[in-house]
Length: 62
Image (cartoon, rainbow, N blue to C red):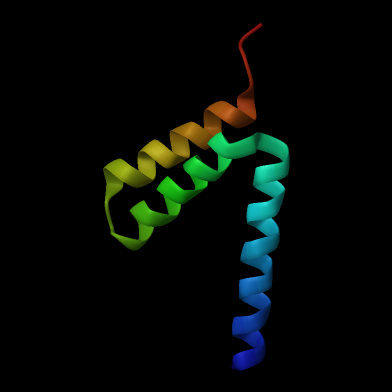
């Protein structure tokens, strides 16, 4: 069980670093909103985080 917890923590840290590297501070804010919304069971907060991440991933309209 501790091995699973260690692996999942390493995955989360690696994913956060990837988001920070690719999308910058706004990506971390979106990921934070999504995570907090899911843990707090708040659809509004998790939806706001998902929208921020979706807008970052789609990029500007051309």
